Figure 1 (cartoon, helix red, strand yellow):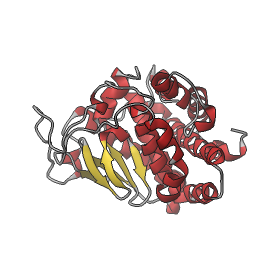
Figure 2 (cartoon, one colour; figure 1 turned 60 degrees about the vertical axis):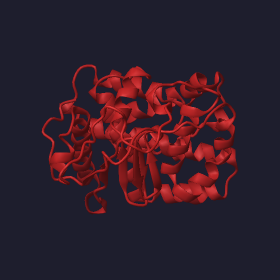
Figure 3 (cartoon, helix red, strand yellow; figure 1 turned 180 degrees about the vertical axis):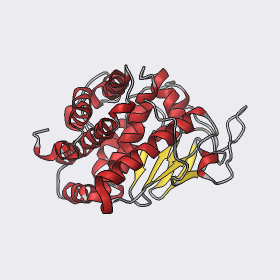
Length: 303
């Protein structure tokens, strides 16, 4: 996707150079314990908390070990052989430290302009926060093992750009549009926050059983996928051959069923919090096909 005319007038923070590697939760059984915490996490931190917990659960749960850099235990210091990347505090500096940061800023800037146009006076710009290994968000500590996430408390999209390499190398989701989809999905959570959708779901989850709460989380995540597709459709003139396939490959790779099958060898639909691979692909494509956020009503679509 052609997004190389990035606008430096975006809200960017750079926490890189402040910490190092991730952490390891150890052997099997952790996934079940973490799964039981989903309703509590959602009630306190909203969708961002669920996203964080799901990432931890599937990267570390089910007795899986040695999954690569995301599971390597280390102290909170800079990784050996890696020099801290520190910007001068300006968006332009933070966004030009490497190609991945630049790509993230390009996608963020494009989404910012797109949703400002769609929402008008209801729009408020979020912030994009880079961190390396460890960081700090309004929802608590940020760890590279969490993957990208949105924190509603400070309206921040948090990203360790090493996730893009993991997305390509481990999950086979290569290409610039796969990365753009990640940013656009998290931006979708910001739109849900602005529209009050996240608060309504959080309130409903507090009154729900675990299974019902998981189902509500799935609807929220699929809507964010659809919003990502809406963003792409609104910028269709910038899409290139192969972009759609890259996005669908990424959506397939991070479906709950695919992640569960890889991590624990079995699929438990009642525990889904983000949706199956097929669902994520379908709602991303629905957004791309329609370009209309009104077509992203997962809550009344029998999901």
